[in-house]
Length: 200
Image (cartoon, rainbow, N blue to C red; front, top):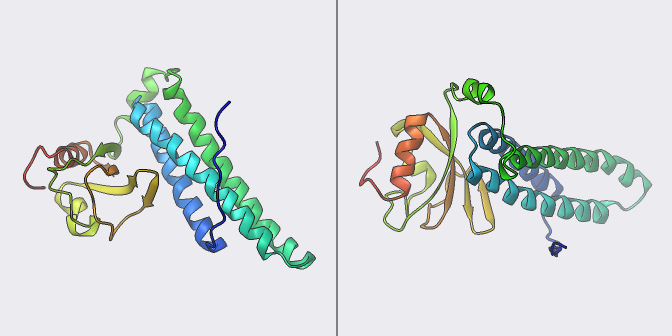
């Protein structure tokens, strides 16, 4: 039996929670498809990490909705918000199922993989090394889209996620999730691993 995580109440607005849930579900879908199509176990594992984050957000959302409902009218008006939250969670569950294709080594037909490998944009995951030129700089300052044709779309620091980071400072040990061209991602991975002295 898996251990149940205890989620403490946090006074985050319903609006902020829904935005976070939307961003995470979008990221999960991108990662899950890439994981399945390119048989990338690391990306699939990140989807699983994000699913845990989503479950926590759903719990926090429901607690905030219960606290916000003062009477029947409030409950009725908040029911739609609860429905949106539940459906967003369903999207994340579906993404986790897609990632399960990789984690359970089911695989997909080579023809499907071949078609999707021809797309211009791909996703990559890499951990930042101590010697990386990325460390100590903000995502905005790195300007990776202009320099190498890749964008950092999320940063995971332990269990903490930063989606669509801009002003976040990249630190050693951070896990970067990036989108871009095959060549751009290759350059980004080399920079993150400390294999080059400059970017672009």
